[in-house]
Length: 138
Ligand code: GDP
Image (cartoon, rainbow, N blue to C red; front, side, top):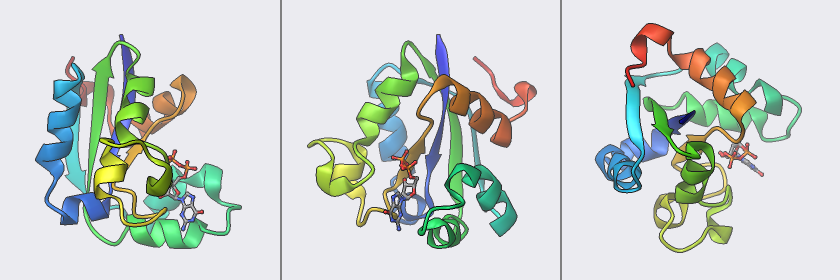
């Protein structure tokens, strides 16, 4: 069993597709083992995306991530890091496969609806960034 962090970004929450996204996870056999809705501060968004701080889009990305509420979830399942990334689709929705969340709902490379951890080490950091162990119920 593996765990990963999923975020529904402000554009996804604004589109009222929280349920639609969770349905896709559940249909794929993935379990939601923790969930909360929150509104990130600029500092919290910068800490989460610290690996991208030298990128030219860092300011724009953290502004976007603080522009409205998000939903954070811990997902659990076999190979769930890769499975979630497949359900999400490519970063740029124009390159995302048909039927993926980003292909169906993203509107640009930044406003791409969902975040998902990309490796076990980032999943461990990102899950701990949002949840205490007591909040994760497998
Ligand atoms: P992810 O793992 O697929 O989310 O992609 P990355 O880790 O490479 O980038 C993190 C997030 O930064 C993406 O999900 C986008 O929201 C945003 N992003 C990535 N590339 C660009 C870019 O070229 N321009 C802008 N404005 N945002 C980007």
